[in-house]
Amino acid sequence: MAKRKFDEIYTDLKNKIETQEYSFNSCLPSEVELTKIYGCVRGTVHRAVKALIERGYLQMRQGSRIRVIFEPVERNIFRVGGIESFKEAALRNGFTYFTKVVKLEKVVADEEIATKTGFKIGDELYDVRRIRCIDGKALIFDKNYFLISATKGITEEIAEKSIYDYLENTLRMKIATSKRRITAELATAEDKNFLELDDYNCLVIISGRVFNADGIQFEYTESRHRPDYFCFEDTATRHKII
Image (cartoon, rainbow, N blue to C red; front, side, top):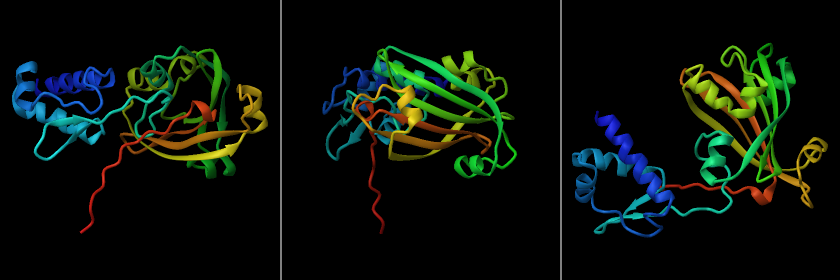
């Protein structure tokens, strides 16, 4: 019951901040007031507020109320600090979107693939290539490898809708962590073939290895973004080293 109440308060406060019901630089009601609003004990409210502080939505200022520090970003397709699917990101931003699968086949990792992706030589993988279209424009080219032993059953239909939805809700996988790198690279012939680059000759690349709750790497991802539709957003907290 306490966990359900915490989730309810956290989600409601987060939504109100993101929709600017609690706008940037405004103050939240006090924790005492929030306990009355949500009909719960103060400890549950405190946990929800603390979680939002840790995620960069709120800031506790000494001698004053809790202040909202979240600012909406116009072009914020992917949140690099979290793990979300393309579908989740598009819905969060209110984009119209669709995915086109241009390749889905089984491969065996050779030395080149293993070095690039972190999988072992001989691992059986799904090689998935998808074009992500936003508001009618082909803007992102996703190249993914999925470990077949952990992600059996991926089809083109699943890849068009949401592979993460399939993994979490059908295979009951718990997706845990991702190690990522952001680079800028010249567009390749493949990029130019699939994406609407206009006058751009480079892309922002987010590459990473994704692990489930058992510590198994099940995915290598390389998401190639047209730069004018890419925005990096993060919230950092300084921890003083004594």
